[in-house]
Length: 302
Ligand code: FES
Ligand SMILES: [Fe+2]
Image (cartoon, rainbow, N blue to C red; front, side):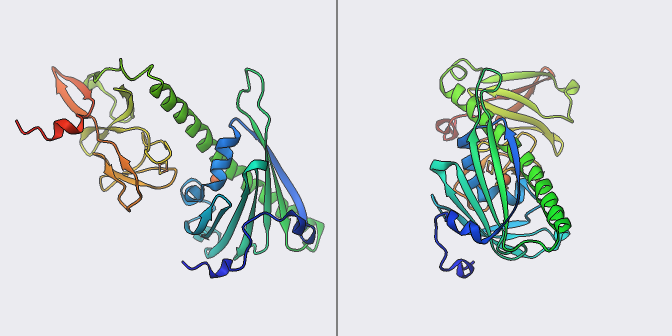
């Protein structure tokens, strides 16, 4: 797309222009996550249509940088369709970001968010509070209208942050496991082969998980056979374990990257590769999952 609709915009938050807008009200929430995950989520335009399908049907990036991003978002048909040009400016040092609807439904609306670290104590090691403030280009005509629009926005943001909270908490857990494995506690002594027990008794309706040689695999029964693919997405550690499979491709729920179930390059050309599937075999009736062979073995022709 062209960025014509964004021409002439300044890539920095100007809070002085807020006085010209109508402050409608806010939405405040605490979440069991931390500022790095929250700021990462603000920059992450790519998750919008996948994690928030009720609010966005597509996203096409126009420009991005440490200053934030500008993109054209598609709106779902259920909510009237059409597109919006959205700008999100970030002030990382202040944990503050401002979203502006530059064009489309709600044009001129600005949403300013302040995140604050409120963690503390052994029971609450990770906690942030966000204050999401809604500004309209002009005041609604009646107080009933104001209350209705505010109620709508608060409900919409509650839903969006339910979804983002799940993503941020899931990603921190995945990062912690990753760091733990790389700290060397898990990998050297992990088995290279694991039995899941009698194949005939194994529940085909659920995803089984095994750790092999420091990596986490999802073992699932798909299209009449057992497969064992990496359970964690190589992009930002999204949950691939129960990702839907269509046409032999795993679709990550966080940003929609698609990978062959046997491993390999992301299919739409994103610079991202899923590691090889683990080997699956049956011996004496038991199902065995074995770590994929290293690349050196692939050239063995014996
Ligand atoms: S984590 Fe981004 S596509 Fe999987
Ligand atoms: Fe989000």
